[in-house]
Length: 483
Image 1 (tube, one colour):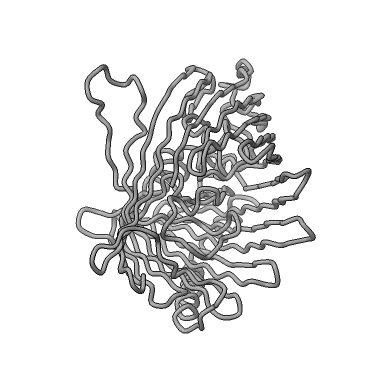
Image 2: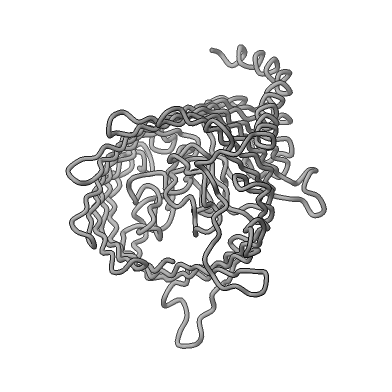
């Protein structure tokens, strides 16, 4: 299709934007109505109380996570030119959370999670260390029924296109999304937002979730220019032993939340993005499969620029030799940036300082090209957005228990951009191998250690005739207490 053909269709589609927005709003309203008037689902009671100390009519529960991490590698965090700055660091971080609620019915309360660190050892001399203390989450919660939950305040949110959700016990964990592999946005990797969400499980295996989240606000308003709002709607249905679902996420971006950082023609006060997608979690014998297909459309109206992309995933978990064999293939569309009025790129929701390549959460099975929990001090930040170039990756991993206390994990991945990097003219990002061991020292204490090696592809060359980048390595360990 030529650019002139596209320009004509662009104006036609611009007239249809209201229809797209109404469609997304329709799914959102359907979820609200269904969750409000559905009947309780006995198998999904999320009214369980936390254990703790009773003080009058209230109960206080406490949890925490403390970790000490070391990392040695020949690259640093999210490098633009790989392998230019070897790094060897040690860091610690502490998280503590409190849940204060009524002790009789457990229907309402306040949840607060504070974080200290990461504090990199050696940043200061023998004096007391200066470490930032942050409110990671802090929200009111209320359960209209035993099978529904309303949260309001600073909350953690993740999309529903990762691991199969459990639809329960979402208040007491550090991160209900630590292993969710959510590809668009994930609270386990820094997506903490203010807003309101409501979720419910109802009759016949239906599950609903809706939300309105404030990603950015202007000086005096959260609805006018300078502000960015995310409207979310998810519907899931249990079908036998499987689960199918639909989601709609609409970002009204008036504050350059997304396009002010990278992609598109530049900052604007008239941006929007819409994600529509379906997913399925299926059981075939002993194996479990997960699939998704996501359509993403965005527009910067006052600049005459739009994009239309899509992403897909097929993953399987297969029991094998006392362990679990994991395999996944993901694809997202990219663009070469040659057309000033349109793009075929797929974009992710989260656009934070840490996401300079669109990396969202622990979506991958490896740890150099994208973040992984035990090695999460250094990575390249590759995700489905991949700086607008798109991504195709095939990955496999095997988790194998040796005893009640020891287990091994190994993984490999091949990654390729959908469109060549315009700097290097190449698409191959490389092949990564990872090996890791875990020693579970106690029920709440574990030591993880391992290493990764990336055979770096020509995608990372500094120019078409530039030298081939050196292979990257990472050695790491994480000692973590969590309760």
